[in-house]
Image: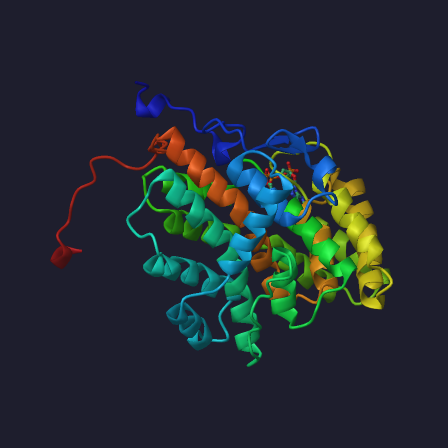
Length: 377
Ligand code: COA
């Protein structure tokens, strides 16, 4: 055992491997693999349901398995009535991520297999969570607009139902493709902060809802999943393309971080960015999207020239979400609706590993302070 005072602190746990995983590999050279498949081979060729199946079952489904999984997902989208009531009565001014985090925790109270923590029960619970999180998102959004929440349609795919219910409009092929690609690209990403939070909670043998609630609280932060909303705030704050240079240089001069840039792991370009940039290019027939895209290209150039850093997943994702008609305060909720398949896969893997994740700290505080009773302070 190393003496506490001799311990080395790895600030931010940079480059520390906290466990082994088979689920995804983030290669700092700019590659990302899900269960050994390069994401470049998956994006645009698989539906999100296929990716979710891959992550939780650790292999790609056959057509028959995928059809059954899709039916399971769509039929699990329904929420318990008390959860719907709680969403509808939540204060409208609070951030929708607060409501999502609360309601995922609330779902635990209505788990149909409560007290069954076997692996098959956890696989079914994982499927239900993947299905129910988008419905919570839809319910938050539509109840804030005082509008009805459409029922999922059996003939639609899972991601298609999500967008249909969110907008109460049938998505066209282009919108559907954008959502599948977005959700595929956000499904998993190694030991990112929210996944790690989920695994820490699961490592105490706590339940899956608790682990996902921890993950949601962690994803919300602007250094993680909350970055995309901040990207859109920045893009909206820059009135004209001609103002980009002055605005971004001003932030960098003030040592401020540019949201949607930089990464803890990648030393090359984030492999997800090229797909998201391409998706946005396909949507540039919309005037607003073209305007935002032009600003993004300029920002990318300025930040690279000054800091030699690249955009991360959250940069162009903001513009893609905007083009789908998603308001910026809901961006992180779409991220969560995709990353849930990664979180639950990691939670199941953590249960298999069966080790408590509990690091130590190096104590740098005082010793032997004189205690003074409260009446004498
Ligand atoms: N804008 C400007 N400079 C940035 C930057 C950004 N977004 N991200 C990193 N840097 C710079 C830092 O200022 C630092 O420069 P220095 O060495 O000259 O001081 C260097 O790059 C390393 O940054 P650091 O914050 O130590 O890296 P990290 O690994 O701890 O942080 C992030 C990674 C993601 C938290 C960080 O890049 C960030 O805050 N990005 C913005 C938020 C964001 O987009 N988050 C989503 C991540 S997917």
